[in-house]
Length: 121
Image (cartoon, rainbow, N blue to C red):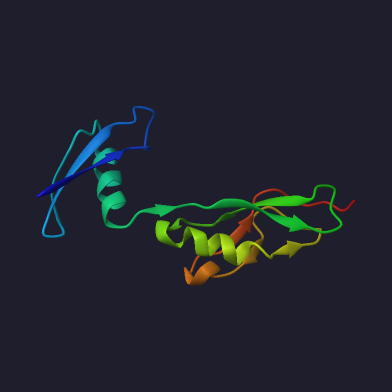
């Protein structure tokens, strides 16, 4: 059996959660202070996901970039592909918060949305 340690980020406590794994099965989870910690640790071991936040270029805007994020978390091992997929995106105003600028980024089924509006120069 092997034990992996996960630092829970569900609350400010930052519990160090130990997850015992045997034959690719989770056998025990301990060290969490709340049910959210147990759930987080299991998900982090089975299929870690992250929300990706970045910027894209904005042409003819007051600011040179616009902030964006994935609408939902994506698999952690797809982050590099997500970043590559959005690296060449350029937007032009007007762009509104929540607007989808890339559908199905990196084949994840998740869209990239704008988190700050873009205004013309």
